[in-house]
Length: 216
Ligand SMILES: [Fe+2]
Image (cartoon, rainbow, N blue to C red; front, top):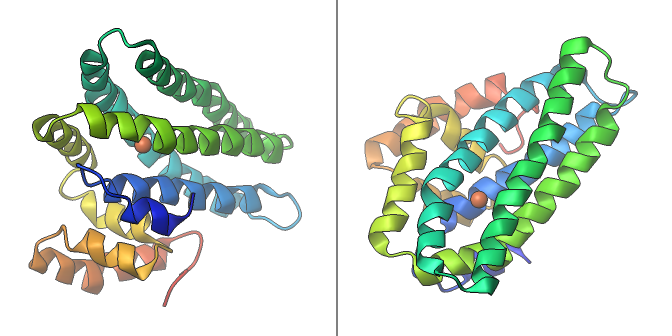
């Protein structure tokens, strides 16, 4: 599914930040896979990138498990097709945990010989999950959740990132995003905060990013 199709798809709720966050995970998976290569990669960049990737992935999935899928499940009633989608979301989130734990264990032990293989497995599992969520999970969210429930989920994520955390989150999530997506995402912020993003948050992110500046 192309970026343009997803971002332009008509929906009751605004999935812009959901898609942008998913795309940031996809981007990080590619960077982590390259960094995990023993001859051409960088274990130092991997470790830094991994810390950020897992931090935001944990926030994202914890918030979905707490504030997104439960209200959808309540509204789904006993409809078998809808229940199957929700069960898949839960199972797919659960399947990522051992793969992430394996990467953590390899980094902790210093024996990273299996890192490329484990990252490839994680990448396949997470990519498939994101595609499934976008194709089947989000249409269910759109059909079943009211404005109040969707806002509660968005607030959950906002609280988890935190006010000071926004300074790291926005440059991370928009790193490499198409200009139109960046513009729409920044429009969600008050104008003084947008100013801070450009003058302080973005330069600081680029300076500290293990991946270097991806856009001038
Ligand atoms: Fe998601």
